[in-house]
Image 1: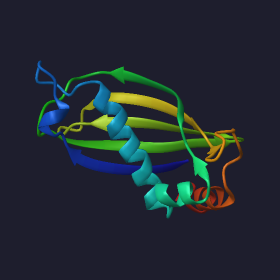
Image 2: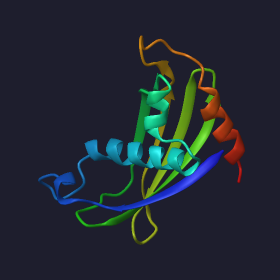
Image 3: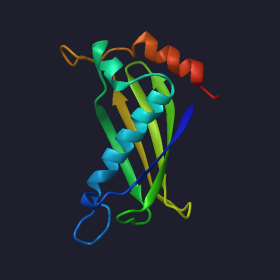
Image 4: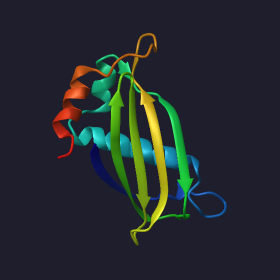
Length: 136
């Protein structure tokens, strides 16, 4: 298990007519948080692509607990929970400035070869970085 925290502010275009963050933006927030976790353990998305791999999301679910608005400072706690075969799993907790949990999510992704999108095992350099940083 590897954890990482990422903090950001809600931008005005992320809100809807009701003044709340539109639900579609949670995908973007968690995507960014996931790659910040990877970057923190020494892997950039660019390096994954250059090595001939892609990581499409194959499943994602959310639980909306509280709303949030423009200019709110949010913190995402991202946890890489497992890697097995072609799949990798993440969980997310999103907190507001009061440290209130406002959203949770889970996502599974699959490693695929860039040239044909066929599922494949995670590349060795990714597995090595994960193993090196597991439970640190």
